[in-house]
Length: 297
Image (cartoon, rainbow, N blue to C red; front, side):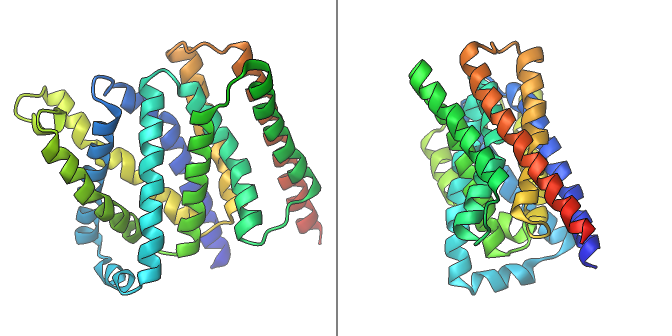
């Protein structure tokens, strides 16, 4: 049973990160809509979509249990803020030609997961893991000293999603229920924004092109499916293993940015990426070595 759940967690992680890797294709189609308004769409339509899923497949009994536990509600309030910040920063990066920065952020995230697991879950870093974290830190320091800049977008995405994953793992609430509570917490804020900004794409459904309206409605599906897969995988596999599969998302984004959208891969980005990729290689070797040693015993 444990092996079955572990395998299911692996498949769900692959689905989530592959979906996220191709997500920029969707957000590029909404380039004329502001990042804040796209975020509002994500909140509103995700809430609607998850509520519909709950009606179709059940789960309101688990929701009632969560509502009776103030500690879980507090943690889910924090995760809702973290995921909203992550969404907003990601959308802004994609639609302002910073897809490479977004890619770098999600390459950094597995290393952030390792540090968070050490700090909050009592996991100890092995020597190679420390070396990998040191390489990543060196990449950021080199960029700061040599080019006078810090990859704020990348670090913001990495740490906001890292803490989100950590807290979702600790709160131990199933994927649908957790996402429903998170979007329900954000929903009133989205409505306030909607009614105080009349005239945006969301309030002009009758005059928008059909294609734009369909894209706006699709925000719920684009948001919900990978998050449900991620949240479901997070409770089935270790955080460090979950971080390993995140290589898929930023790799797809990197290819899209440099080929399809022609973002410049200059010396500054090249040096930083080289250190991060080096860190990820070391991290991967360590994981494989540990697995091989475990199988031998």
